[in-house]
Image (tube, rainbow, N blue to C red; front, side, top):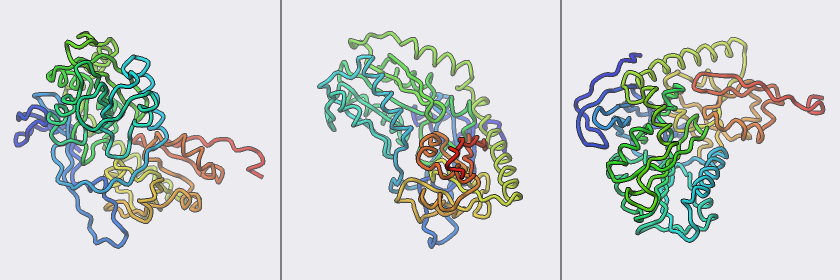
Length: 390
């Protein structure tokens, strides 16, 4: 796969509306990430171009095009995501942004994530219309094709002295860790801190605070307020530090972002070698998490039913369906335990602690969890109590 950025002319930036950019990652033809066909559905499953572009006008990294139609959301919120939400809301409260009795308008993630419970616990009152003292976007805005219109809409609901809390999966972390499969249909905006702060500066906002979290290897929450509000016009030191780090890494440089293509090559080679060795040893291999990021990895690495018996998922709405193109069956966690796999490839590594607590039978039966980060990394099994080994 070529890792050189390719100029693109017949395309316009989702922020500025202006032409000018580079294709920095091309995953070819991929299935819709949120479509899980039934075993009896006709084949082949449809595929669509999937490319990442960086604008030379705004610097925004984004999905080039998306001809897919969003399917019904079937996922559930992992415990790691809930815990991160609790930490984020608590830190925003400690910073003084969540005054009891204030109105809050939330733009939750279409995948089911919401901070409503945590925000109301701090005394905020959810509203749907009008101005709010707190506007929250929790992984939501990336799903809007018209990025400028989406940001303008959120700012329009911000009270004069209100605060916009915006959480995003930092593209700097994605490139840093080679997580190329974070690119998926339906995710139109991929934000770096320097570009995001500059974009919202154009809409009259200043970045007050920034917090980093280990979720997805790099999640960021930034608090914005209107310039001239009671919060002042000084950009926070934490924001300055994040911008300096990401600029030093080269996150606005197309050549640097295009190194994700090298990560694809490494991932495919490493997974193929791992599964070939497992097959040679006669091991039963399964997967966990039929997530949106899973489909592109399965296709790029050509993981077939011969290489992977099934993929378990905690969402009942997915049980009995299959992964697109490869048609690997999706099963319940109980069925995974009954399968007694020797290896379980974990497509969402953040689930590891939760799954180990919930399904100790995997390791007790001699199986191992394998993190896909995105290359496979076997996890040392937890030592079992002597009575469980008798």
